[in-house]
Amino acid sequence: MNGLETVASLHKQLAAARLWIRARVHPFRYIILLMLDLSFVRDHVPKIEEMLRSRGMDPDVVLKDFHQVDAQRRQAINSAETLRAERNRLSGLIPGMKKSGQDPSELIEQTKEMRGQIQELEKAAEEYDSRLTELLVGIANVPHSSVPVGKSADDNVEVHRWGRPPSFTFSPKSHWELGEQLGILDLERAAKLSGARFAVYWDAGAKLERALANFMLDVHTREHGYKEVLPPFLVNSESMYGTGQLPKFAADSFRVPHGEQDLWLVPTAEVPVTNLYRDETLEGARLPISLTAYTPCFRSEAGSYGKDVRGIIRQHQFQKVELVKFSRPEDSYDQLEKLTHDAEEILQKLGLHYRVVTLSTADMSFASAKTYDLEVWLPGQQLFREISSCSNFEAFQARRANIRFRREGKGKSELVHTLNGSGLAIGRTWVAILENYQQADGSVLIPEALRPYMGLDRILPPKQSNS
Image 1 (cartoon, rainbow, N blue to C red):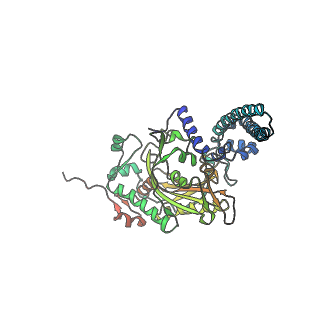
Image 2: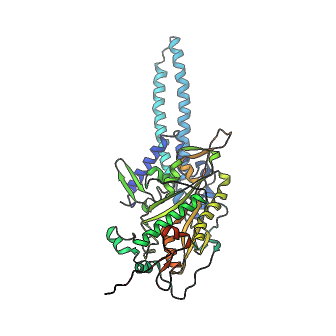
Image 3: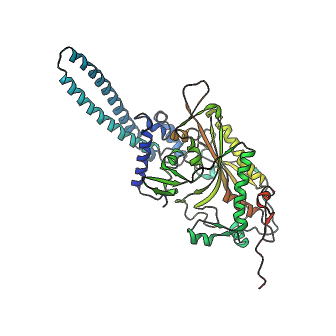
C-alpha cells in the first residue's frame, strides 16, 4: 500500500507521534521537538514569512492563525500553573486547620473545584498544542545565508565542473536502448512483476549494480573514514517524523500496516541511520560521527507521474549508498563541504563528467538549510542529471528526533547538526556508466576502478544466433 491516504489517516499518524513524544517530555514542552523552535518562530514571524515566500510557500496558508493559537495556548498554560500554585497553597493550610480544630471542609471542597478547573485548562492547552503542532510541522527549515534566493530550479547556482563530456564518432544512445540491446535491463518483465517504474537487471547489469555498491562502500569506509551500518528497510512513524518525511511527504512514501502501528518502506537510508541516535545524548568528543549505509529505497513518486517515464531515472525502487553525519553546530558547514567532496570523489574515480550546483531556496528540500546537488552528464540524453544531494539540516532533524550532544565539562546538552548525501545513487550511476562508456560496436567499457569488482573490462552484446 502506498502513501496516498486520507486526511483522517494522516491525523491518526500525527496523534500517534504526539502521544509518543508527550510520554517522554514535560507536558506543554513536547512541541519544540517536532519542528523549528517555537520561541524562534514566535520572535521571528516576519523572517519566517519571508523565508516561506522564498521557498514558494504561502505564509497565510502555512502559518494561518499562529499568533492566536499560540496566545491561547500560553494563556491556558499560565492559568493552569497559577491555579495549581494557589491550590497547593490552600492544600497546605488544611493540615494546620485540622490540627487547630477548625473545619477544613469548605477549603477541601474549594481545592477539589480548583482541581477540576486545572484539568480543564490542561485539556484546553493540549488541544492548542495539537493545533499549534499541525501549524509548525508545515514550516520548512530556514535556509542558510549563503543559499541563493530563487523562484525555481532555474535560480540554482553552478559552483564548478569536473572533467569533460566524452566525444563520440557516432550518435550516443540512451541507457534504455543500450540496456535492452545488451540484454541487461528488462523493463517489460519488471512491469509484469510489479508494474511501471520498476526494473529487472540481468547478468552483467545485475553485477554492475552490485559492483557499484561494493565499490562505493569500500571507498567511503577505507578512504573517507565512514563506519558502515546495515539498518532495517522498514521503519516506524516516529523515524519518519524525525527526519521530516512525515507528515508532509506521506503521499510519496509506501506505508505498510502492521498490527497496531504503521511501518514505512525506507525512502532513503537517511531515515533509519539518522534515527539510530534518536532520543540520545552523544558525547561531544565523538563528533563528528560519519556513517554510510547501502539500502534499497522506495518512493511512490506521487507528484511525478509523467516525468522521466523512459528508462530507470525515476523508479519506485532503487538502490543507494547514503552518507550521514552528526556534527557540532560550529563544524557542520565544514562537514558539508567534506561530505560533498566524498561524494564527488566517487564520480572522479569513475571518470564521469559532472557539475556541482547550490540549490536555491525554491528548489531545496523541506528540511534542508543548504544543499549541493551533484549532476552527472548523460550523453545519451544530452543533459546533466542529479546523482546526489548533499545537505546540512542544521538542528532541524535533531530537534524533531531529540538528538543531542554534551560538550566536555559542560552540564547542559545541545542539539547536534545532521547532514546527509547520496554517495551515490546506484541506479543513476549505472545509467551514467552505460551512456558515457558506450562504444561504436554496441559494447560498454567498464571504468578501471570497477574492473576488480566486475571481473571483466567491458559488457558485450549477446552473440547473434547462427540460425
